[in-house]
Length: 193
Image (cartoon, rainbow, N blue to C red; front, side, top):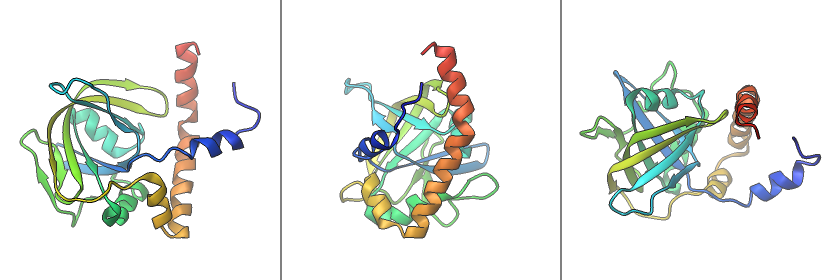
């Protein structure tokens, strides 16, 4: 069931101002990264920290997370705005989005960005496909700080882009939503809601 007037819903959802995360993954010599806002701590147990990441099933980085069972989640600051734009605006399929970007390989095999506010390496323990998102629950196995500053949030990210860059990301988001709409509907239909 779709509401009659989507404008006020969209407007109110824009009040949410999530952190910008860069997710990286590597598997069998391939590597990639994406920009995400659906990353959250999901465990209250300090002895068993866990995060949840909601990623597009169409994204090459998502495929690498599925294959490797690992991801690295990076909080970034305003200094990394163009890197976040690059990760959001380009596909890693057929090109190395990480070319020229300093990284290092964690002992687990996860690929970590050298420059970021903070990083978390996590091993996936549960994955659920939910139509237009794949959700990965992952144990945090390592973490560190590589910089300082306030984490970049969604509103500041979009305000820091040029009008052309904002239009490009909006177009990519809308195209992804349309392409994934049948999967989302199928998932909703199968859950009985």
